[in-house]
Amino acid sequence: MTRRRANLAAGLLLALVGCGGPAERDHFYVLQAPEPTARLATPRLKGNLVVGSFAARGLLLERAVLFWQPDAPRELQQYRNHLWNEPPARLVDQTLAQFLRDANLAETVTTPDTRAIASYAAFGTVLRFEHRPDAASPSVAVELEISLVRAEDRQVVLLKRYADGERVAGPAIGDVVLAFERALQRVYQHFIDDVPRP
Image (cartoon, rainbow, N blue to C red; front, side):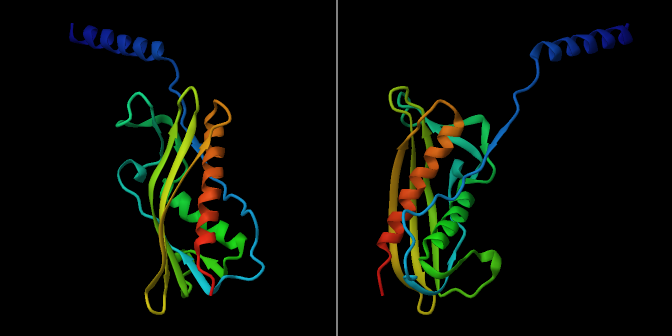
């Protein structure tokens, strides 16, 4: 009798699994470094600028793409199967470093991985990085705090919060990724514009 019950339970389990169908696969998204609007003719910063690792808190430490619904303004949610290939803070510091390099902000722009000596260091915090799938006006929202520190005397050259948004052109998550890139382009460009000239 026990063996019969075990066989019956195993058959029932197989039937339930079969009815459920295949699980939806995860989708992973990569942010490309946006192109600067212009390249500086001469570097504004002498020496090496190291773009350090950005910080984040809460759900921004995870890889799931976050979204916020207008009818639930205090509830931040995660897409179940749509994920960044790395956490947003890592995506931001890597794309910022490439953007500043392409824009010729400093003589050299590196990341801590190179272990190069810094003349300046840029650090920051990702405060907001979310999709807003409002049917009337879908968009993304980005907010970063970025600081620029002179290494020789630890003097804070610049400390500012940057917030921007961008409309999402289509219904696919790929369109959301492109909107994030466009919003970051403006944030990064505003940062360059704010770096004081020598």
